[in-house]
Length: 330
Image (cartoon, rainbow, N blue to C red):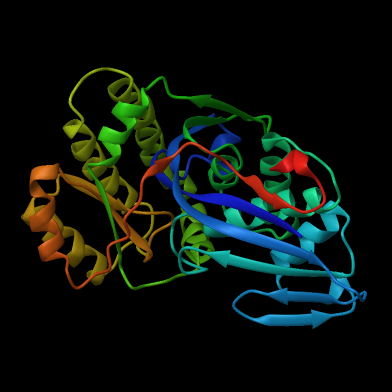
């Protein structure tokens, strides 16, 4: 049996510049962090040659080509596992439409577990690039590349997507205590809405010529936040930056926000939040807020109709946490 653990993520700035329509013309840059919420993939060898799958549905098939779950099917084909396995996926959040990168975390976690099942060790770069290949090239999902990379590498990272298709990954020079202090000002609330990110991103891509100027401005906030975090300055400017970024992001597509999200955000600002944004493509999922600690009780009281999702920033990327076939992975 093999179990992989792959983190979810929060994207702070630069989202949208990781789409090929942007980085093929000029480098895209994002700043994001993995968090201490995870996707788990469990692979168990079976006594027969059938393939058993357990996720939000259950599948029992004889051929990998008959698998309905496209991410599992393509990950198995890429890793060379074709029969006689039972695969179960578990997650700390709703399986779709969270805005926390769960689909890409599943893809990265599947590849990591499948390679470990085959007694193969692979790098974070391999996991990220192959996950991008599956989701973007093979399945033709209109998504970006930051989720796959932050799931594979983990940590608080600036990731640059270069026009030749490669990526440069840099860790921020920030102490653990300062990172914890920053994270203590961040709150997540679930909107109660789920959505298919591909619909929103497709609409965003259709407007890429108009959106390019907006995305360039959003990209510029990456270096501004990095400079703030790597300094000893107060974090509160981050809240103002998130507010600016949200006002820019909502211009990219009419599908990014709605009356429920707008109402949540307005209530939060009136209660003491300094800024925030919807996570991921938008339209639902989780609302991220920057709230100074002295205002957090009031914000929680105002947002009591919405489920809070406590979290901490996390350093680790996808890893194998259990493997009965080898002590090397433990």
